[in-house]
Image 1 (cartoon, one colour):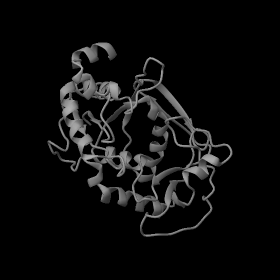
Image 2 (tube, rainbow, N blue to C red):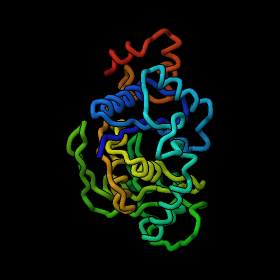
Image 3 (cartoon, rainbow, N blue to C red):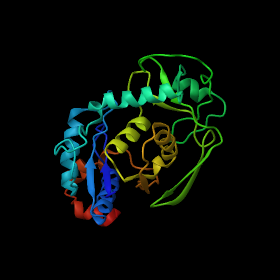
Image 4 (spheres, rainbow, N blue to C red):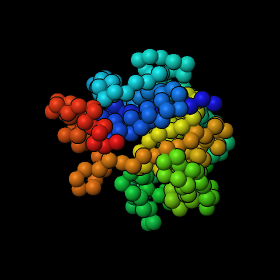
Length: 274
């Protein structure tokens, strides 16, 4: 299988230099392997995704020096490359998980989960679900109206070799709990959508930030349940500001737009951060 990588920005704000560096590393690994790079727009969040941010993504990525072989602007054999246009594919995966009994309906709000005892979580991770709705029985032909959670095999030790960070271990039910695959507002979760898309687009390696390390274990379970081939992973360290806080889209001064307006060049950014 030839190398196939991807960059997958979300149009929920202007891209910052941290995004650009991660995407640049994805491009470098693709080009070094003589492979293809896919651009996918991850716009599942209907409240935060905006057309102006989507347009800015394309412009800012080109300005930084990124080029891709397949994407919304170029087309390709695995279109559409915009997640909001791929609902039927996600719905088929939800039905498959439902029919296998791998997921269950959950009526708990995020506030309920946060209030539960023993639900620690990091800044970038969802809280550990206490299993409140695991024993409930609920059948439906549509996912809307409740959260649908994946039933993790408690105590199973998972592992993968990260091409950037080495051997990684995680324990289901301890490092992460039953996670949402479909939201009550009828939107598929990040975990489900990226697994379905990465497999459908035949990606061989996923390059992304180290804040998504734990998500890899969740996605391993989904790959297995859906009987899909699992890609390799390369997690990159996150860029931080002068206080050590990781960059976010709220850091407007470090957006590619602001830096370009200030006269900073892509070459200067790459020299500083790569």
